[in-house]
Length: 295
Image (cartoon, rainbow, N blue to C red; front, side, top):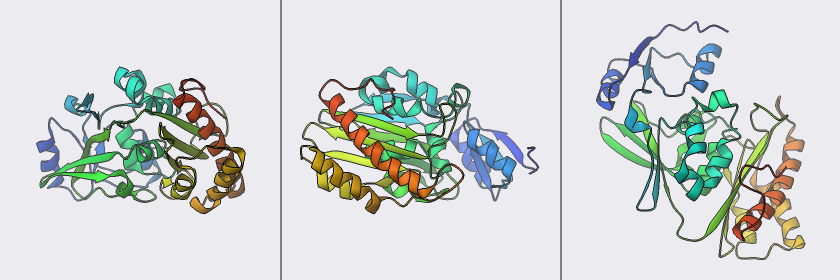
């Protein structure tokens, strides 16, 4: 499908130039990886009058850890997350999630920031950033904002990003307790596919948990009822079954081309049980290696 929309193209040299372009156009869009943007342009979902290319801004490509705060710049691709020593040592579930995104070719271009800016319900980054309580750092001509991830997703394809703002990156506080994570993604087949359901879990050494589902509501869903039920409890079979049943209270899947709502609901329960089992095993030094699917 060809791109029929006409627009100007600007390759920005710095953020000041980006903000200057914002002032001269009504409907600017940012190009970083472009994997979602190009598709939106092709199907007519957006009609920009200018595309601002920020791929040349090297300082938006940093992955760094300082004072126990992780920084992921807006230009960091999924493959760069997979290859990062910092990510694999301190945040391995981010690498685990990144390996499930599309194909190697897409991951060479697609960025985590772009993934949350597109804000499609099946975003893979959303649930992981949710359990890490990440912050999205934006910038505009009036300065910077720090937006908690739970306030970032407003609706399907709608975020808290204001007009004439750009996302600089994502910050995540490294938990001060021993912890482990698990990302579970259900697809129709092995290969490049969007999630039918996805799920991120963090478990801490005091046996508290954070759980977030994706692709089962317009935005990522923290499973707060399940968390309250199982926090600091031994996950015996009876408690696990109660947790499975609470899935029905926390999510509201729909039927679409990828799955029926009934199948999504059933598999969300299966994924919760297997994900919790895997993350507890990892917390205790065993379990499946990060990157090995549990479904």
